[in-house]
Length: 315
Image (cartoon, rainbow, N blue to C red; front, side, top):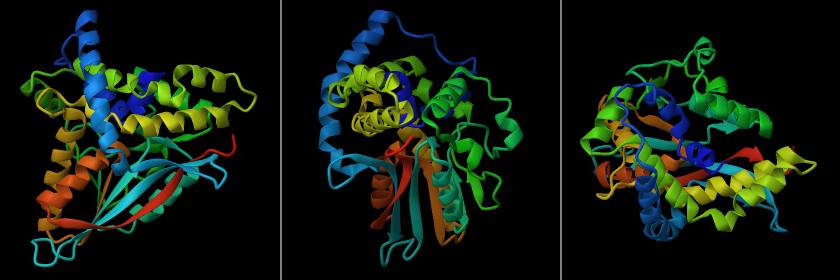
């Protein structure tokens, strides 16, 4: 359960479903190697995450009485600084979770329709468009796990409700080959990366009640609501430890590598004259994207809008 939550938090399920099919993926490390990687990640990366805790773009909203009411994701608006290359141009970072309420994705569709171009994530061949019939062919283990998760929580799946055939949508992510090549360039692998994620996740487990809290929710009379509340806390807490996926040089393919590819395409669109662009990615990608917009594109944040992804008050 903890690993699945990690996958959902950083949008890894979509990537891994494609990448695991590639023959170039390395064999998993020995058990001792994985344990060592996880142990190294737990301490130092949790400290880094705590320092960055004010920079999250996913949160649990609470009532005045302190009860959880909604899991929310952020839309962060940036605008080009006066005198800069992209002065006056708007880039919105639209964070998303990959399972959510139908109303959440309906609201996102309305908002995304208003941009000149929407750059979206999916580790797939360049130019891929997601068609409804393609979803019927998804038979990977991770896709099945996601389907089971959404059914258990009475939620819906992003790929089934977002209109990826909209005219203003453009694929802006690595291909499976690029993903594997970037891992190999750094001497990394899927399995080492998962081990680092697991190690980082262990550091956060106690504060959310861990799997024991999840087990209690599973057997409660109002299971969907209690499960959503427990998982929402874990999703937010896991965002605090995404630094755990970095390698020894502070790099990673899953977040930073894919963001770099997305921002190459963002630059193309800005240079082509687009005035208002959305970058539509998992919420875990946003902290790194914010830094890139500020340092590489000379843009500054203007406002943050929060959307309710999960209603935590009902089943």
